[in-house]
Length: 235
Length: 298
Image (cartoon, rainbow over all chains, first blue to last red; front, side, top):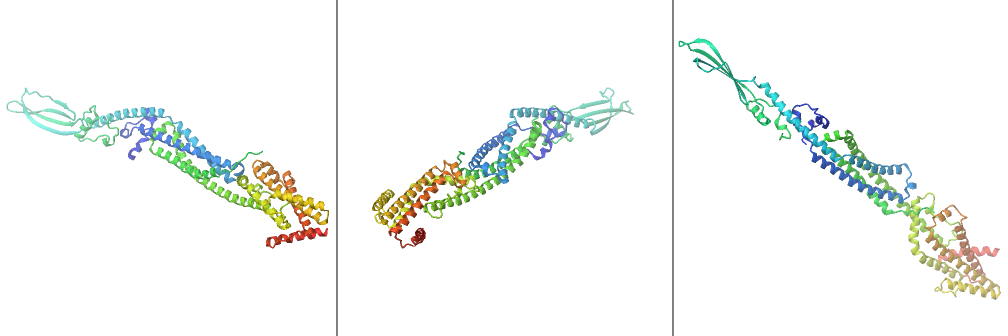
């Protein structure tokens, strides 16, 4: 797991994710899923290695016990040093037993179920968060970022089909056309109008966040997150 | 009867080796746990049981400590084993000396309270005592017959040389000697003369000495073969003189001594006592002369 991501991990505890108690910010997008197979493999290896080592060690401890018993150890090894040494031997045996019990209490099936639920919840939160972040970022610029203004003056015939307000939107822009009547009338009685065309950025968020992200890029608007850091990119 | 315990040196040496292996095992367990903790996702252990991570982390320290402890254990076992081997070697030397002194028939030792077997002193660790006993048993049974026969021949040669009993050849065995002794006794008695009487005493003394020696050597054979089964009897001997086996032993030693003394005294009066030129015999000659001088004064 990349070290740069470890700082995000503990902010997304299993209990918080399953309970939906997660801040929907960019960090969610960076939090990795739990690698279930890697964990189960590591756990099984640990159990297997410890079990094999403990079994061999138990046999050796048994042999040592026999050796000590054969020397009538209860009567011979009575001083403090001997007592302590034999006690340390027994202590190791006890520690191994306790460790085996601890590892035995870790249920692989239970852990697998928890991991699956966690990953599923996390992915759902990622999807929602990404969409929310894009929409929020788009709303900040939509209709507010003026791209250009065009002004024209023309004499229009009365039968010109014109409107005083015109708005067009596409995926990335909104065009607003305004026409103003001037008080200039020519000899022919035709009126002069001033047309002001304002073009604004207007990012339409698509269902596919990748499309939306493309529109942000096209309009030169910064994305609300670093797409290169998003993990599980196939959202 | 206490349970028989055998000091198994193979097991002990294996234990020393296994201590080192145990140290490595403990270290391996600690490494396995640490490796797991390094790679496992903390979110899992934190959710499953917040104590598990702490407990597993603690076990890395615990088993590192166990690894150190097992190293120390192995060093302690090794030191203890070295002490045992040294002590066992010393005890074997003492046992060997005891065997030599007893069969030698030294006047200083024979007839005295049986020398306390140093393999059964209070200060000797039980395991060393048992080792010495086990070694006595394992070594003595094979060689007891040969050494007994040799010891008997050696003692009887001394007799022949001292008493110049020409009619007794080197090839004759103890039974043959007994027959000769009986013959001398009866002939001497029938003769009735002073020389005859003393000759009979020589024969009687010789016979008695032979019986005394045989009895002692037979006892030693039995003692060796029964030593491992009669631990309690040997413990009885440890408590001091006055036990049944010791009394019998003393009696038999006294028999031999008495026989030797009577025979030697009689041989001296009959003029059949001949001294050898060997330096060792000269020492014996002096002792015998003193003994004879004492007898003459009586």
